[in-house]
Length: 465
Image (tube, rainbow, N blue to C red; front, side, top):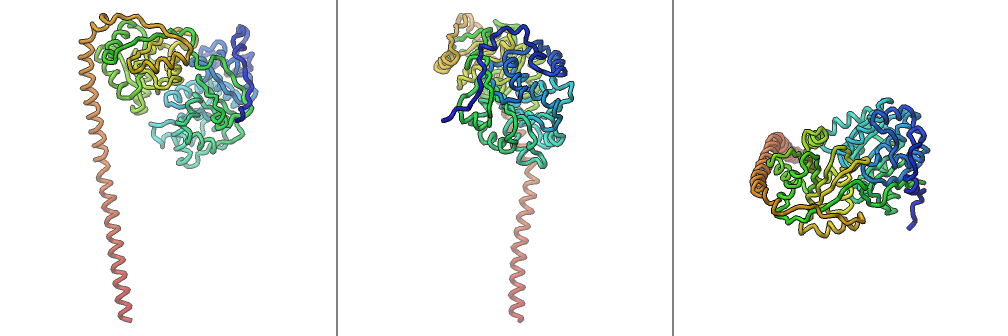
């Protein structure tokens, strides 16, 4: 199998003295430098230092860098600079695996392009298709989309085309190029020009040649400024071995002990995310859930509450693990260990961003030991045990059990109300459905009678002749 030919930039380059390296020296336009200054980007990050020169020359880029390293700026600045020279609508497409990441990328594009009037459209699921069609009809400069919803518009929105596209970006490319989005990505690649510039960025980039070839990367520069599957140095990682039946108790203890910090708590299922958030609320903590079964407005609302610091705890599934840049996250707790080891890197990357310190605490039950060992092997590091005294932790058991009971009741009430709403929706649609069925039945009967009468008249006329 042939290897994709790439020019690899050695990570040693990133370690060179950076005092003299500025956005200006890298060739970034003054209007964009001013926007960077407003965003408090005083100097380029490692990935930006290495990626911007070849990107500004028009080369395709395969970028591998740790989370929180400024990847969005590394691909947004070259796009906006080319857009300055070649003003055109429907200029760039950015594909992301999650809705939340799409909104975040849009915010950064609009901030960086504020001085040049850049218009963006976010095309993700959970939002009305008609409203999105109107946004696309205005022909924005940049479309940020999840693959599935973009395909919906390519197939169903009249007049929408990506034939004039100049840039394709895949952020969190390892996730987009995997089997989850295979059909959608193939359809999108057929609808965009082959003559384009392509950027692939991720914290955990796959090296499988087929996947890179599917993305049609040509003569690419590979920029790698971190070790494969590494975590940042300022991230303090530890674990707690917790019997499954006491996990809630240990969680409450840790949050209480680290009171004053902000937390993202990762769970593996939507139901456990909701239950855990309710449990913490009943214990007096300001927690808000975020998962894929919530409506998009509620998901954005939860994220905004956490960003605004009105809630100090975000309990989330892996929809919050990719790319989200929330500077004030102090602690990441893996309440459920991730099934896929690489997801661990994305989860803990929500803290210790852009040179700041952070902490990751992993809850390892008797069922998660093997997963935990795989993660340690992946990152090449043995974690320290987080110091706890079981007797001290279990002093909270009675309060936690009461909170568990209330949370279970609230979950049942929520599910009951949801079923009622679904039943009401079906009932409201039922009359129209019945009318359609009745009209169809009458039409069928009418056709039958007409056919019989027609045949009867025909026979009668035949006999008369």
